[in-house]
Image 1 (cartoon, chains in turn purple, blue):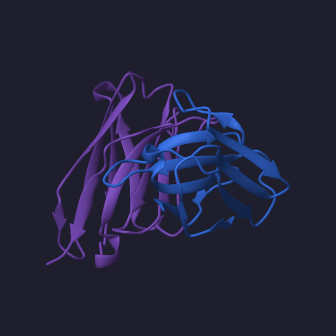
Image 2 (cartoon, chains in turn yellow, blue):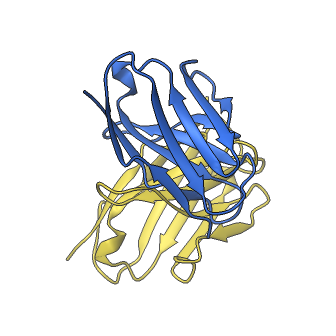
Amino acid sequence: QVQLKESGPGLVQPSQTLSLTCTVSGFSLTSNSVSWVRQPPGKGLEWMGAIWSGGSTDYNSALKSRLSISRDTSKSQVFLKMNSLQTEDTAIYFCTHITTVVPFDYWGQGVMVTVSS
Amino acid sequence: DIQMTQSPASLSASLEEIVTITCQASQDIGNWLAWYQQKPGKSPQLLIYGATSLADGVPSRFSGSRSGTQYSLKISRLQVEDIGIYYCLQAYSAPPTFGGGTKLELK
């Protein structure tokens, strides 16, 4: 069955770089796409970006200058890197499966990231 | 970016009651609208996609409809397990944008 699992540090210092990994199973990254969505504590959902089955990427323009999404298809992993973190980047970060017809049909459990010194 | 205005922000309803949540898109998005339910401490779960199509495993008491650029999620008979926060999402154009959420509580 389709599964996604996020991993990464729970605490990042301000101005540092966040690195997260999404490990997927039940589907191939060469024929499926993955997105990142985040949710600040007690707040709503924000789409961050996606890596499509062909390897191309799209980013939320609000984050584009700081954000990079990549993948290792042999390891079934998708990576998120975001630099210059600030306290407002404190959030739960989710990776999701996405298709052109059905958006965000499967979600990982999420990983809480706190930006603090 | 397309704005999704979701209402109400919070809603208190009784068991077995009919509940309706709406999302207004700032422009035409066709049927590129999905609904999600999020329970405390959990990931969002897809309920409806394509404005009216029920996702696999979702109870039939959930339904979606569209009237122009206004979209509605209806729960025909509220159950205890339906308590949570509901979000709409437009997937018509990048970036995909979510509504602000509706917190559904039991009266």
